[in-house]
Length: 99
Image (spheres, helix red, strand yellow):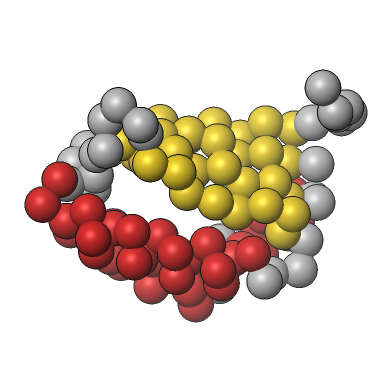
């Protein structure tokens, strides 16, 4: 399994637009083959900080995700919405257990 997790600072004056774009992206991505989880979360203490959390069955599924039309649309909208660079990490998970 591949996990992608990180944070992205967004513009405070664009929060409504950020939320709309994020919901559209997570809905489209969640419907992709190989996607287990694709969600955005807003920080409780800093409403301009969003976390992305993704789980993919395989690296190939993640690579296919990057080639989708909704990813191209999302990427074209980001420059107007973000307030700085994101900090996103890709993890390869060989095992997982419920706590």
